[in-house]
Amino acid sequence: MTMDVIVLAAGKGTRMNSALPKVLQPLAGRPLLAHVLETARALQPAALHVVVGHGMEAVRTAFDDPDLHWVEQAEQRGTGHAVAQALPHLAGDLALILYGDVPLVRPQTLAGLQAAAGDGLSLLVAERADPGGYGRILRNAAGQVCGIVEERDATQAQRAIREVNTGLMAVSATLLRRYLPRLQPHNAQGEYYLTDLVALAVADGVAVHAVRTEEHEEVLGVNDRLQLAQVERVLQRRQAEALLRAGVTLADPARLDVRGTLVCGRDVFIDVGCVFEGRVHLGDGVRIGAHGVLRDCELAAGVDVLPFCHLDGARVGPGARIGPYARLRPGADLGPRTHIGNFVEIKQATVGEDSKINHLSYVGDAQVGRGVNVGAGTITCNYDGVNKHRTVIGDGAFIGSGTELVAPVTVGEGATLGAGTTLRKDAPAGQLTLGAQRQVTLPHWQRPQPKPE
Ligand code: UD1
Ligand code: CA
Image 1 (cartoon, rainbow, N blue to C red):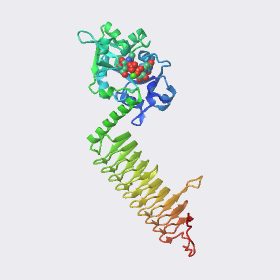
Image 2 (cartoon, rainbow, N blue to C red; image 1 turned 180 degrees about the vertical axis):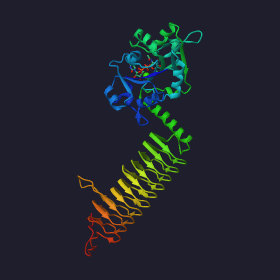
Image 3 (tube, rainbow, N blue to C red; image 1 turned 60 degrees about the vertical axis):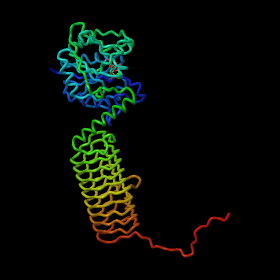
Image 4 (cartoon, protein in one colour; image 1 turned 90 degrees about the vertical axis):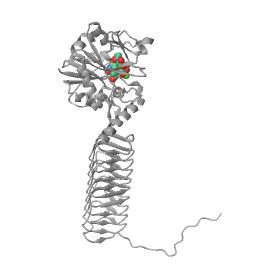
């Protein structure tokens, strides 16, 4: 039995009060729709249709995946109307209908829904203490589902029903073809309700199966930013729990945000307030101090990142120590056991093993050898206003504090630069180079004095 997935994503999302279409609002660093598509793909559908309307161009541009079949719904005339737009394109026997703004539903729940549908219809329902806003599930005296009534069309008695429609359903393509053309917009909103399919099917003796989810959070919808924030917390908690189960120690699972993919080795420790973006890989025994932000980084085993560091596009070798307050920018490539200390910025630079840049320095567009000591306040002057130039520092060099390296420039192996040198020409290997001006003292100079009152 082959299945189509239809994702409804044409709605405007008025309550978000945003210029961005709702399904592009970020959840854990990715658009809402990306989460739904990932779940849909896990079910390996024959085709994946996305019904778009509001902000259609922006949505399509955000997703250039070749497996998506875009369906245009120019005017939003209801969920039934939305599905009807996809109807001519269905490839399989069954259609699974998802919402672009219900991002947390799990693949196993949908597989259950799919299985329950058979060649008929199944609904994902939930029991809610506060059913406000949802369509209510109507059952007959025998307890069988016989219809769905939207809140606005419901009687007082029907509004008391706590069993609600999550909106997600699996329907045979045959039933869709038979009943969608029969929907009528005779309701409070003047829309074509997909939910009216249920009563039509039941009237013809078609069995309707209600699949109940006990995990309420997975069917949370995002209509406003309050709900978006709630859904974000649920997803972050799920991710934190997965990390804990995989053997990662989190100082506080509630104070971690992963906006992308975080892969960890054994015995990794992550302190509070850290944010991980893009793809981050942490090797065995890595420790991330409090309030670190790491994006697209690879840290080898035993790396110790002290608190308040920002790492973006960096590779860090085993046993290195970073921070506190260090900034690694794209192209920072640090060798084993390197030390990068406080208020140090590294960009497009390789640093060889056992080298130390411990205080207040900027090293950009550089190649630093092994066992180099870079003193406090060292700056590579890599930019002439137009071009970037390289600085090369040989193995075992010692760069005195407060040095400026005016690139392009090379410091030879084992060279020593005196403190305060402004290096404009290459420094030869093994020798001391000083840019020193002679020190003078003016014996008769007097410090200006404040005028007496
Ligand atoms: C719908 C259900 C309701 C259910 C609720 C769960 C109907 C008639 N009602 O109500 O029973 O309890 O979801 O959240 O189905 N959409 C389109 N095109 C349209 C209309 C909607 O693509 O013309 C999309 C929206 O972008 C959204 C989804 O369909 O992703 C649901 O639409 P929405 O207007 O939020 O439905 P509800 O009124 O909440
Ligand atoms: Ca809704």
